[in-house]
Image (tube, rainbow, N blue to C red; front, side, top):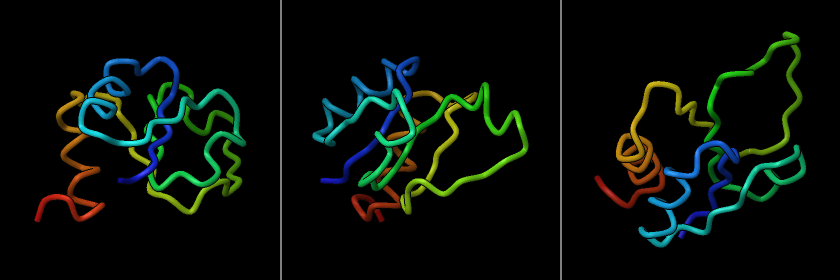
Amino acid sequence: MARVGVEQSLSNISEALREKGYDVVELRQESDAQGCDFCVISGIDSNVMGMQDVVTQGSVIEANGLSAEDVLRQIDQKSGQIQ
């Protein structure tokens, strides 16, 4: 099962991912994203400074406006769980 990093404020998404069997890591600092297949962020403070540093090779999903089910669906599709 994929390893998914999730921002602290998105506890409902973390819970839904754990129920589905995903390995969930809470993203508290930049180094927490290392080794994650996916990172789910709120998007609230996304790229405020206009700078980018690549921390993970995994897909980043911005959860702003998405339900937990929407995020699960995206991760399932991208990880090959659902065709």
